[in-house]
Image 1 (cartoon, helix red, strand yellow):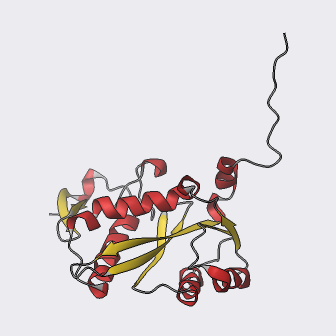
Image 2 (cartoon, rainbow, N blue to C red; image 1 turned 90 degrees about the vertical axis):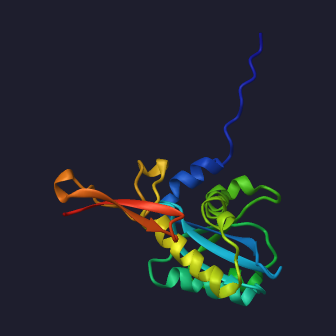
Length: 201
């Protein structure tokens, strides 16, 4: 009886790539938000994969390659630039964006057409933003959306727990023993979510 033996792939698998480069990887993606006046706003999010930390976002009504390239500089300017960047094939990135990535010594990894699962971390954070925040508010305009997202990003990075981080937040939190006082409830995002902290009486 002949047993078919699968050949090993000629290079690392996608899962192996993500695991090997997690500490040195950012993911970027756009999503749209309709306003109360039926305008469509575009939101760009930039996520550090290792700790699932949202490092940058911005909002515009008319995204261009120049605007998107400038967002990459703002996302990577305050901290060490990553080695790799995962993005989709949206035409808004363009040559100007790729040139800016090369100038920052970032290697772009462009996902396959119609394969959002290859940018799963970006898709997941966008889903979290929608389910946990934007599905519960009516956005008035660009300034209003920026204010809401600023509050959510702070909540997401400092308070919201992640199973993949052993129920810690992207920015690690100290364990608060009972000796620090009783547990108090702190509203976040105008009461949409809550944080529980210990506070001395």
